[in-house]
Image (cartoon, rainbow, N blue to C red; front, top):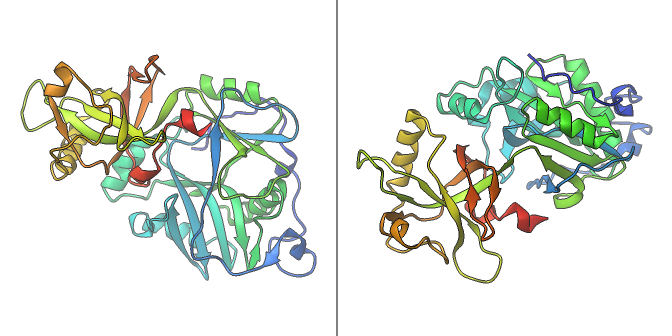
Length: 353
């Protein structure tokens, strides 16, 4: 099942125009980019968190998927799947890699999100984690939203609209249900965001249609969330109320950007866990114990006496309602572990603005 209908505004022009060719070669196609080898290290373009969706025809808006960001490198019928931090996850999603490798190109680099879909068509991060933990990737879907290289041409300098036109023609020709084009909509960003929130989506991504692909975080891509949700580093846990073999709550932090050593403590999360996730998390945490707190501002009082410190390596995704005046999370809920993110990369999204 595909995504729910989000057609709150007119479709952007790239959903109607077809490029002259999808072969990405020859004099006409060379206008899309320049001939160049694919670099060994690929860095994705990242979005900056903002409070409101931008307006105007210079912007398109897409669904913010609840999955793993993946750059796929296609070469002669096979594909490598790389996480945002450059980890090779091809072995974790072999059947999906085969589907991507079957795309009608001799070589390409695509940018997208791997998701698991509920029956409603909404992406579900916990369902995705369960599938990967079970080694079952047959139901996973790759939503593709950008094309960086195609058949020897580097397209990153081309405008986004041009890249998406070429990408759509490739995906349409493939007619593969597991590799799908991420639809985008022009203008009326506030309406699109409101529709996304009503459907229970995490949020939207807004992009400048006339800009090139720029690695790293910038303001050509903006993200607007329906809920507060981000990654945090696990720096410890509290004693449980019951069995000593488990934990009570996870202590969370972000990398400090003020010059102080260690993580900045932002609160603890003790809800949202399943029996399976509790066992899995506890097994991983049990090997990371340390005598020193990784936080420069650790919890104090009664909480401090119940704390067990951990080497700050594992990253968790957490949803929360808001923050207190001193930066602590309100009503946090655990959503899953993020094996695709390095702890060193996790800073407060408020600081990233």
